[in-house]
Amino acid sequence: MDALAYWYLFPLAIVIALLAMSAGVSGSNFWIPVYLLMLNIDVKVGFWLALLTMLFGFGSGVIKNLMGRTVNWFLVSRYLIPAVPASMIGALLVPFAPVQLLLLLFAILVLVYGSFLILIYLRDGEMEVREHDRIYWSRAVLAGFLKGLIATGLGKLILPGIVNHKRINSPAEAVGTVVMVIFIVNLAAVVFRLTPGFISDLSFYSDQIISIMIWVAPGVIIGGQIGPMVATRFSFRGMKAYVGIILLIVGLLILLRALSLVL
Image (tube, rainbow, N blue to C red; front, side, top):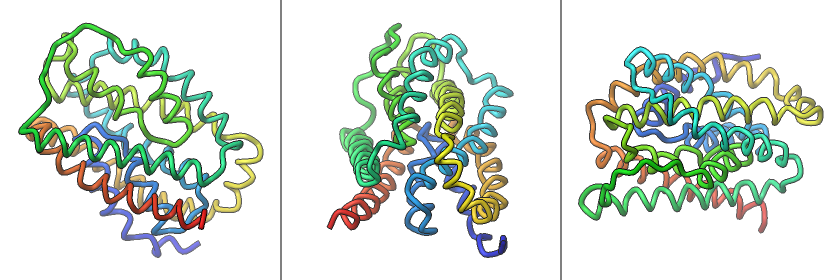
């Protein structure tokens, strides 16, 4: 086990966690390309490892948001009711899903969301803000299912409904609430992916996973502490544009990987 071989993941982890936490975007959007393209890990193992990585980064962010009192527990409880069981179902379906399908779904979702963020920026700010008191139950079900199946989609789908809710007092509180939901749903997805067959696959990569997490875990913990502070200082508009550009690049890279497996 050559842990020093992955030292560069430590600063990279800080940057990724900072971006994810400050923009309320799932860190798996960035970690899946790292694990699949940079480290050439098996696709399904890479998806699970991205979820595991997020537990450290978002766990750190959860602590920071709790200390800053930027978590709306009413909205957290409402969105967990549909999202958690849906994520369990998605996770249990992973063994039956072809690798190409998982990659294509991930790439398409990331490309669409990245384009959406840039479109908002080009339209000179946020789309029309209308306060509401709704809980988007169907959106939460879909978001949880995608989190369990392809390790992403939760923050993208529920953040727009939370940020304009009447109970939200600031952008930082919206992000903090989404981060809490993502952390809990993410934990459910990690656990329910651990089928006997998949545990056997993980054992093959155990030394590499340990070597990677030695650097990644402390990096995302540090980034998770910095991210919420960044969220209080930057506008959603600027952060969404920056993250949108990164997501377009990520989506294209994963799409190319998926197509290379088909062709």
